[in-house]
Length: 310
Ligand code: GLU
Image (cartoon, rainbow, N blue to C red; front, top):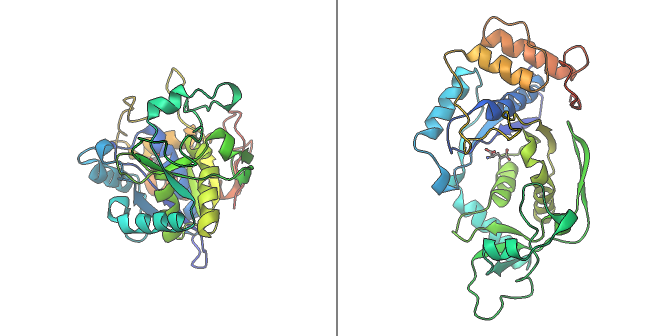
């Protein structure tokens, strides 16, 4: 491996323990591990277990065993979001003291029915929040969730795989939730607070989170946190073109053949299989390829954009 003691790179993998890792989550794990190790950096693990109703019993242990079986060794102690409530509360207090959040009494249904139609409709099917409670809770309403006030204007960032991206968060998303109606800290807030606490310099994750990046960059700007680089890898889809997910029954990785699991994730990323006889030789070959960036020679011809090697 191309380790360098001087690298300041700090990457992370942040699975939600709603079930075991599957072929889709393996792709994000493999890409983030290859990027960290090819840069001689650290690779940290964060368990995003805030959404307690979705946590599956035993999933954390299963995920850790899966990563170990694939030869993916994390640096430093694992961060569990469920143990970081005071950090989220203090970030929330900061937003409150800046008058940047407000309580919202709208239900999901009401937001869906408020029907912002046409081009503002988001790909994920969610509607932008129309701002109903921005100027104060309408009379008779109980506060349910808490939302952050999104300033007008676009957020631009360069994704190392996807290129330049731009999102007008106020139009596309609207004021978004930082504390949910069920009292759970929202992913956007927790991820930003934890990336800063773990001093993450480089985020590598699945393309489904590309639309979260502008929101997260916006929160980082408010808190004065540094902006990590981002790289969003293509998603693995099923025969119907749907993203593989635990919710739609994606199968757990077959750990009786760890080398094959790694090779498959590598191919799903768009690379040619590497020559390897075991997981150690896989990782050293894969990290060398990753460090060069994909080229025609090692991509198997899918029309994806190549990422920028660091
Ligand atoms: N917990 C998220 C997931 O499992 C990943 C969050 C992130 O990488 O920022 O999809």
